Figure (cartoon, rainbow over the protein chains, first blue to last red):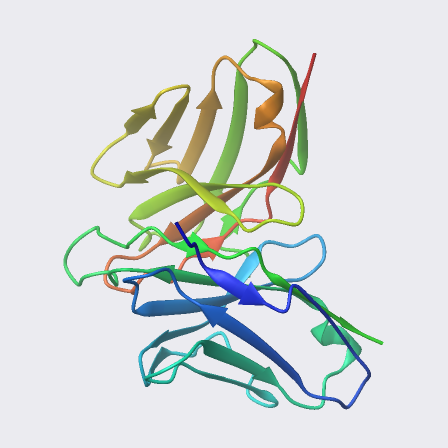
Length: 120
Length: 113
């Protein structure tokens, strides 16, 4: 019963390096979401992807951050030239269905255990 | 701009008593609300949800109440158990926004013996 798998669980990078976080959704789920949790804060939406498409990236910082969900393989959240402020827990979630316009079905999200990025 | 607010960062309750966690929201477009529970070093897990067409939803020991006019919801846990000790996040969304959830900052519940 594999849930959402994220790796690495912990990642340490020096300022200026690149960080790549991977997420494999639950079996049968084709919708992936990335959230970031800064210390002592709630989770903040970053991006919503379906296979090969970015659906909503309204929460992504304009620079240095990118995300993809290729036809084959996991979703990748990429942070270039990391800075100390990028230190956070990054959570991936998946769902089988998106929210449907005109209904209250938002689709409960299933979260992974998170990837904790520390920037030195 | 914090659209979903959990004003109590922590709550301590004795085992067997009722835990009440509160959540307020400002965006009147929100029409679906969820509670997630999170243990340290783990991802959030879904607990219970409620649509804006209802004012109460119950699942075992967990009940969520929604007061749309006050833009307020609460999670009741009764009876509270030590295993309920965790951080509880309130989340809200707008129908048709593809599960884009807006989370509160969380309330840490400690259930004592």
